[in-house]
Image 1: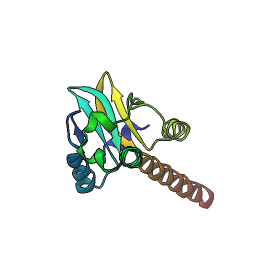
Image 2: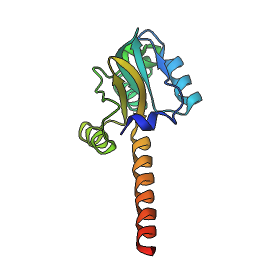
Image 3: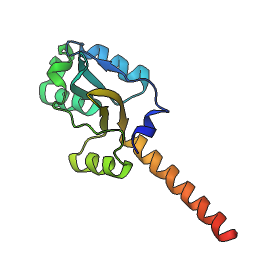
Image 4: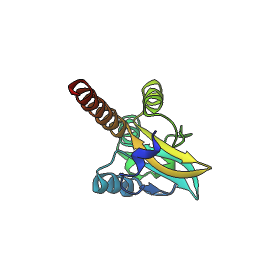
Length: 139
């Protein structure tokens, strides 16, 4: 389940809709992450990813550097619950062509997972299964 991935992750990094792009860029760099949630109180207003920034730079040029989160964020944001399987989450991300997925339960944001988090979990699960099979065969 996707909720178990959140246990080992760093705290959620978020901004408010009025946050300037310079602050968002600084957060992405400092935390070595690819996206931040845009929060309006306890509600997800949107998400700003590296891809959003590149798209807006291409479309609007350098003027985008003076904008804020609300001007460049993706909204509405697709979310999943903590009991969503890793495979289902990967399918959603692949079908919708995005790399970050907020995890929400009872209107509370629990965290944000990336496609990298999901791939890492799938590899760990496959390695554990292979090890179990080796022990089973050897017994």
